[in-house]
Image (cartoon, helix red, strand yellow):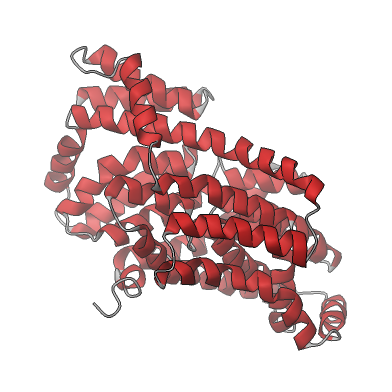
Length: 434
């Protein structure tokens, strides 16, 4: 147990000192070798473990989904989704902010990553709503929080990594994320409606904007949005119909995004493709390298039976599954504050999954609990990837966005508690008909 504590002290000290995550994780793994010299976690072992970890067919889905997200972001897919949502919701109180949440949910089903949703939806929706006299800080915070749905609504890159570690079915993990994602989206919409009733809206400007959209007619809006809205159904429908695997679905999403953006909508010029590929590589390179380093640390902890020690401690300390889940939630919320979702999944899953297993928690249910918890980390300092993206879009200070996001995070957290203690929210769809 002393070695485990020592490794995590090294890890969080490095993170606190702003050492890059991959280097922090590598140093934590090497610290185990220094603390327990008989362990094989020397530099040669670390390199070999990284290469072995990345030799995975399932992980191939990660760079493909990232590339697909870049193509769709630059191809204007999000704006067409937003128009469709606005057509139906714009007349209602809080309708346009609710349309942002709905767009984040649909766009999340195309990209699988929270920051990508913030970048694509925020760049289009924030200026539009600010022109309609919505508070800029409120709208920015809403995009930052709702963007986290991109990691929950399937397909989710985080779910791919979790499945690789635990052996859970990637397809079933995707199914398990549908209802929790909808529940969190609805909880955010409820807060948005309450906020708009309390603060008021510039209905004259909003109605004029919605009237201009409705003047196009439903068929025109539907025709313009149809191929964009069809994207998640092609990806998920192909997986669950057995036409292709999740990894193949990622490849299909790339080609579908290219066809729609380059040849049908013609919003992505061919000269932009090299830049799109570069942006994808710039994003996926660090993630894959971090994945290798994190898995190496997890293997090192396994060698010293850390998961067994922690499991025994948790089971002996907490006398109920309710208390164990609460403790796990608190721990994951803390991890999400300091690490990105992929790093957190790769480091904590090998430690926490045996505890959940010993408590009789279903592997799919536990995976959704983990991912929903860690998505809150997208909008909690000091890391807050979505906060950083929102700051880059608007120039509003990191902490100002975080303060405005607090009520939305509370709504997110209430939904998380229901997901945690009502397993049916996660398990109803994947176990349907069994």
